[in-house]
Image (cartoon, rainbow, N blue to C red; front, side):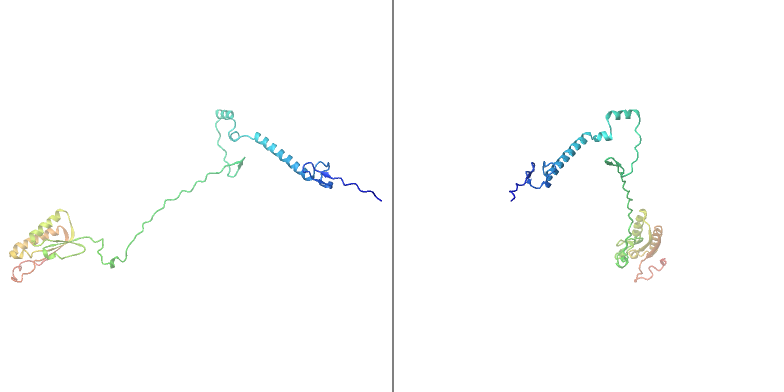
Length: 241
């Protein structure tokens, strides 16, 4: 009869204090478990990388030393030779960590040309209003009989009770102001008929018409009206032209 078996040998990890009877989860030298050995190896690698980074930061040159260089070398270079023209660098070409980019010039905008817009009301002739282009190129002058005369392109001058001498005086004032008309319409003589001086009236009418011709191209004379009481009063006057 076989005797009692000895209890199995148990292994323990000094790092995580894990024990086990399976030797496969421990390292070959049985110093620790496999998990703890991996963690220890990773910690050692991290420490090594940190040390290397610190050494590289100490040896790395500053920005001013890379671009400008030492102060003594810069002074010597300026005193000995003139600075050479910079070599053009294509966009995107790498210079260490810096990339040169050409400045883009914005295109100049052409000045806007505003065209004049002609506006015209084609229904204006149907509105019945007086066009603004009309000019007063006609003069109508006379006694009170022309009081109610209204023409769109005429200047009406009414002198109630005026005789031929009054009409002549007003025409001379207009001539002194250097006013000219295309046509002059004169109606006078009715107030001179009461004086019964046909020969004198003929001379005055001729003088007024001559004065009006010096101020206009066309002269139209109207009057005096025939007297129904005495038909022979104006029989010797010429017909108005």
